[in-house]
Length: 245
Image 1 (spheres, one colour):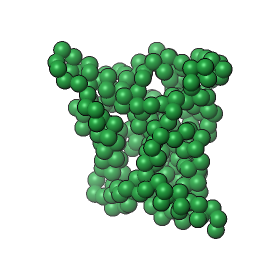
Image 2 (cartoon, one colour):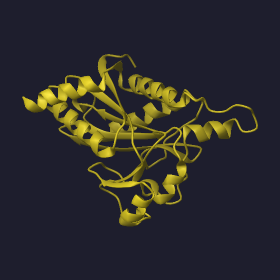
Image 3 (spheres, one colour):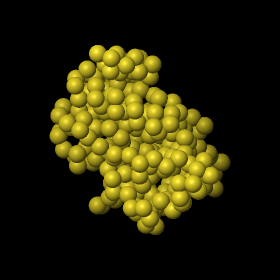
Image 4 (tube, helix red, strand yellow):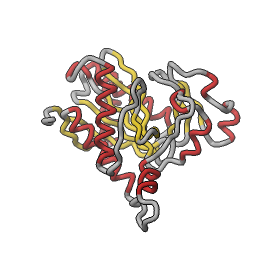
């Protein structure tokens, strides 16, 4: 797709879920009122946290909040769609703040576009990814590699996707991921190790940065964006100025 619209790309580094959520909400308010003129992609890695969405059933969180805390895992209830999921080290989390009125005012279309972008990103690693009919997210050979949950107000989105890159997959044993019983979770690292089993090849130590580049490229191609880096400090200053106005 021809790139016609700017996309600001801001890396938040490692940030708690609550802090990142405040950045998302502030950016969404600014996008709604027009003071943030362009779509924005926030990229972040969270400390270990289990988040519950509007469709979460209590039985899908397999430990009590106290037991999760003893494992060093926070529990956080949030206003996105979808069921329970996990975020943590080794995972690339993306929060697109997008005004769908400049694309297509249709949340189902938006979800399918996010899936398409991640499928394109995974193709850069020769990982053949696909949708799973009737479910949201991205799979490869029946294993789930990326989760998606979004929210929108006045057609401006926040929340987004989580792509497992080098994630410790044992964390997913603490929950029923996305409420899907029997689902097997995977990561880019695990898929590369599975593909290259019996060889001397190992995933690149630069895998996290490679995944970031592939995801930004996949989103740009899918949505017709022209991405450019926007420093976190600059974004914070911009949002603070809006809040004080």
